[in-house]
Amino acid sequence: MVYQQKEMNQAILTAMNKILPILLLSLGLIACGRETYTTWTCIDNARSKSTMILKKAQMQFQDRQYDYCGSLGPQSYFDLKCPAQIQDSSNNFTPSSGKLISDTNEFQCNAL
Image (tube, rainbow, N blue to C red; front, side, top):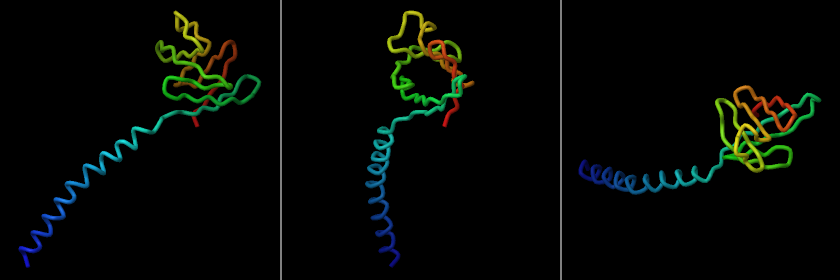
């Protein structure tokens, strides 16, 4: 009886050693397919709301998609075509404060 129990335990361990790596690999591949993004609600001085989405190296804002041009300190810069000097970009966003300057308009943004 004890011998049969040991054989059964060994069979279960062998099966688990085969199934577990396959399961972990599958979960890893599923997680790699997910995209991470942050959605923000932005309000301008006239109290108009706009939605901004930061996804990978792009900003979607007011029906346009901007490329990430770089950062200087806490500020991130986005533009349709990145200029030679990133601080000349059309969009300047500071995630820590939620302040967005798009062209000459200033917005206060909050992450959802």
